[in-house]
View 1 (spheres, rainbow, N blue to C red):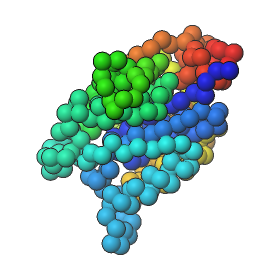
View 2 (spheres, helix red, strand yellow):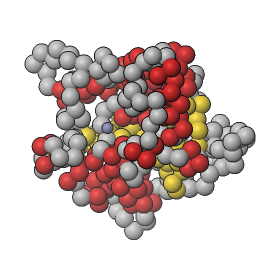
View 3 (cartoon, rainbow, N blue to C red):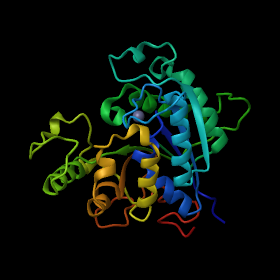
Length: 298
Ligand SMILES: [Zn+2]
């Protein structure tokens, strides 16, 4: 019998898991796969965008409770804090804090993460891309640390508390396809709603701090069925979502196109032949010898 598939998603802050991978995490639960999320920092530098009355509670502990609620919505089996501090945006005072994630040596942080990789033995690991998806320093660092951790975990010469080496079969980065962003912008404008890209009818794609050309996307996962849970997980991070956020305000008929697909670029491992006419994978586990994987008897 093929193994139960195991997925590990690495994210810098609480809420990133729901935004970037909420669909594939909920899908993992639906298909009986094991899922884990590593959060690198406590999100201490976030703002209380919704103006929630925290009473005597600090934002970090409030965000821990929000994250727990989001992970429950998504049916995530295991959560690990990597133990660093939110670095904030470039140029802010949080960036200077000695415990800020950006100041962690890549090797030191990667060893912490590699311990989790060896313990959890994921077939698939997902993180930000090398640009940090949208440029936040913690997101850039999370990519470096994840790449290094996957290498350390597989290295038989590296001792990590006696844990057996583990080779991750496929390492992905989550991606925002530029074409989808442009479609979303047009659809929001057409519906008379605020677009996160402003009021101009056309966006200069080269000016965007993020977005991956459509042609670079290797994997496109249909998470429309998981969408209600992804949206519930996003809403669980209420302090990070202002009332004007399009996460809350996108109408249901647009939500499927905006949030109903999650896209990835395979950075390490072998892509399985696509099952759809666009030639792309439809499953993060495609081609692997795990239960239920596309392209296998499983
Ligand atoms: Zn983040």
